[in-house]
Length: 306
Image: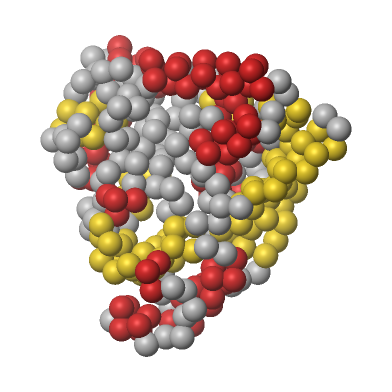
């Protein structure tokens, strides 16, 4: 099946300048790694998303959602079928005395939202300000930093299944745990979330954001492309400490390297391939198991073709 011909001859209403063929995914990944997407489509509203899901179901085309491309390793063979980037970026602030409710669409960037909250003197989001992702991705993995997780803010989430059916998930249905949620188990695409925040003091909010951003800059290798923290924290150990103790800080395969600033990060120091990263991950996992009998787990997700 010639996917480009199929889409070109379809009656899809999505603007042509938001449909790309053989698009290099390293351009859409915080790791700056990844082969081409057979077809990449930027979705700007729910109607378009439902249209693509219906089109894909009828034509039996695989769908992959990549969001902002953070927390993700895209393999060198690229992604077959249709790859979707969610560009739903609207938000609404509803005030009720000191309680603030925010309805944010899935494509809203965490950093941008934190600045909106600062401007509007809304508190409770400061710890998350430096997370390089979107609301949808942050909910999917229950992202967190400095003692605050998305689960602390969520009231409900609206998502859509691959048949185009919308569903509202209450907080207790979301199975929010350490870097996981129901969306890692079931095939739903997050559309928007309702968050509970508080009225705050602008200078105090600004000071807190700066403290957390400066801490990230000091402790994490944000000057290099990466997918964020590569490995999950262990139940009774800190994975980065074991990697450091094993003498793996600075170990590299090709241009993939264990960060010398934070051993929990694998970074791209030049033109790393996904193959480099996978081999480095396997080496680190093997060394940690051999030395400490710990099976460390990935925090990042891997998609695409070898």
